[in-house]
Image (tube, rainbow over all chains, first blue to last red; front, side):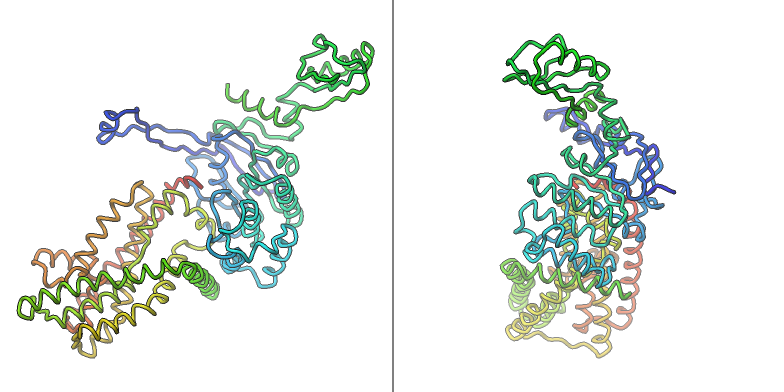
Length: 325
Length: 267
């Protein structure tokens, strides 16, 4: 089966102006302009299957948004191969645009001054959604995203979270087969984040849609995606299961020990992450885990002991740190 | 076509809903639309009276007719796309429009037409009041009255096409304000907004005839005033259509090249 998204050696080079600080440099800049080429996306390759949900990770400025803009046809790539649902995105063919959506926090499909429902209706006309489908989608979204009271208020009077829910609703009204979501939960409270996550997941399952999502909240990624693609400085660092990411970049486990007799020095068992009130967190190499655990149990009076994978945030931090060098 | 009409209808409904939200802004727009032709009208009538009745071939009553008609034609043909270009292209507001499976120009056409229709409800009564106050004189032949309507429609299409194309220059330059200003001055003088073009020195008249601006505004006005011979009207339509062809070709080309280099900043 052909993948929904196919990316090979994708590149985007920006030419950015450069100039020394100071007035003299500014005057010189009138005559001669310096510029420099920056590779925002530097030869990345990956595929996304139909119905698959993939987390797209990387620190600020890694090239995630640039990549999403190329995938959705807003930017022309500087090089490489790209196809989404069999289309070349930058040609912006009608049949292509009808089947995708891009949700970006800062930019809106919603008209600011009028109720979201008016924008829904405009999009229904633009995407030629039949009245029956339109009704069904609006009902479905109203229920799942709890939009009832929101869609009749002018958008400018909505809170950030409320607006984001309407933003997602208007973006998928035409039932796209591919969703590009750039930080869909940014700035939202935990309940709202959870709600949006559940909705995206439900939508993807129900309609078999592929989702490529960027987020700074690892909870989003953990809840939605079993697979992640990590980029840094425009290059691909990792593509695979979220659990494999932890295995590859964090060859450690965390052992949490509750001691019966209060604090003891456990530094000979492993690296101490924290220690207070009889509870000690140790970081040990994965291969040592079994041995250290049995030693701890035999040497000390242990009340409770658990072995955990390190939090995914820590793993990601390590990935970025390694990618930077 | 049915789908296109549905899109236009929905877009027009939203545009009007948005416009009607801002009552004070609407009123200020209205005042602005009426004020500038009114000022020129008062100045030129005063000059005409001071000179013993006429300036060139224009009497005070001819000026009244010229500027009242100019107000209506200018209103119908003007656009704000160059003014919006900076926000739209430099700051990435174009991105959501590009994601839709319909050319962004559609939204602009509908916005333009619906705003014009809304404002005509004020402009036309204002024109009636000014007519009572200044006593305009028109003496067109019947053919000129008939020719006025296609001339007006083509003028509006030409101006929209040219200004949409100029707005796309913003794909390449970051500060549109300077360009906007220059364009505004050209339109002001060469489209006949400050004074009828026949009152300018010969070189300016020549420039006005060759450049597109006259055909965007003054041409339909002069037709209805009865100041254009059938021969000149034919030439006028030919020049207008030629500029329209050039404009449409330039629009397509600029759009294609501009998108290639669009960087979707900030969005």
